[in-house]
Length: 512
Image (cartoon, rainbow, N blue to C red; front, side, top):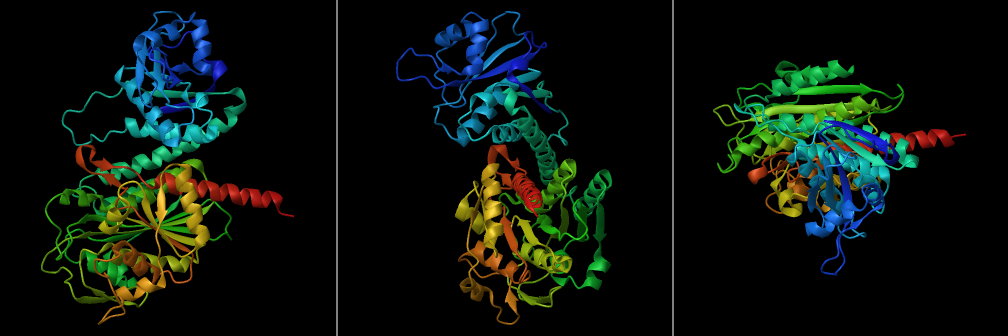
């Protein structure tokens, strides 16, 4: 899919064959026969067509509700394909209404077989934040609608004809909109990589496959990748990670990525992604229903790889480290048992009360390893707890943080790209729930506050470094008829980095 931005004045008088012009309309008022209201771009086109657009809208019965659409082919030279009207709802409609309208527009353009779509929608919804936001969100929404994963289908669906989307904006907004389009397209590349990896079956996407993907990504974009295998992990003392992999035939791996776009003296940000490529629960085995979805337990790892792809595409001037502890959690005669005690990389002993609370075991060794980079901050991403899904559903990612400023940055970035998160506490009072009876710490605190006690467990291994934990168990994938990965929170993390880079540039500009 190709994205572009042009000035509204640059719309050609005769469009390419197979092109469609997408025009936003506002919801009609209470009068029974009142048509939806054309906005500035649509009104200009209507004038060129001697009022035929208004005439069509009167006859169509369209009201202009959010996402409602109608297609009109006037058979005139001004368009080789036609006009697609999409409802924006009321003029005071919010961000979700705009995104829903874009999604409906792209879906409708695909269904009518358009090869190119010129969207007036972005310029017309001027009351929705700023043009950069509208362009970026339109790119993300369009890519999401058009995403397909058919690698293992014997008979693939016919590819969508829609190949290019052109966003039309005012001349004075062109430069800002083009920059936002580039950022959005880079986010889409990272999201697509994360989604594709997550949708792979566990017999393909093994720890070794994640490691190979990381090597190829690093080679393509010129950053460094290291992969530590079994013997190296034993030598390092990553016994918590190794405990998870004990029952699996697939060997574990620890992937270390180094992206050095910033100055040598600048501290890196470290991103840690949980990479359990299949989670059976181990000896504490999961129920059979929907266990196939446990191939998605590596979506944290996938999001780190997707983020690095986006950052490399944008060549951001920042230093990053990516850490991916990868393993399968399987039951066999050599598997870790409930009640076993292991010594982690940090030296902390862990009583494993439930082998299905394995993600935190991988992460604790990775978090301890992250400290050696003396980072500016550590952010981990993990499909960690069902308790987070119970608390927040599938709308918001659970955010836990030791640092208020870091939490505020992440929350704001999520709101900016509508990859939403919600902060939950990691108060000291919760720590006593995971104090071990026979070891320093237990890997579960029981049923109550499960997402919080999991975060509290992780907090013990980062100590004084600013840290945030994103529990994406409810947002990394969808169940049901639309089962599949979402690519979250790649957009949130990419926006977080974009804003960090912008803030740093502004500080340097105003420095004496």
